[in-house]
Length: 72
Image 1 (tube, helix red, strand yellow):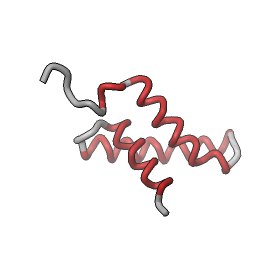
Image 2 (tube, helix red, strand yellow):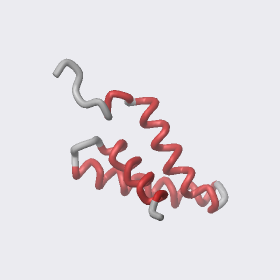
Image 3 (tube, one colour):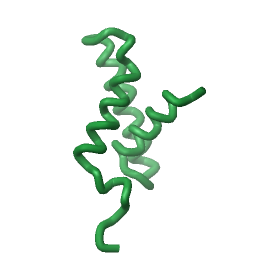
């Protein structure tokens, strides 16, 4: 229970930046907008897949986000 919500929260945190509360807030808003605008183009069944796709893209584009700073 709640796995989809956890994936969406993790995607919002990755989008906004780990450790940045305001970034996570804006990331959540962007994920919500992307999901609801994606329903206009795709089937509503893909709504959760949009958040998962954003999370995968963020992990591919910005991989050091989970590991923290380099050289610390």
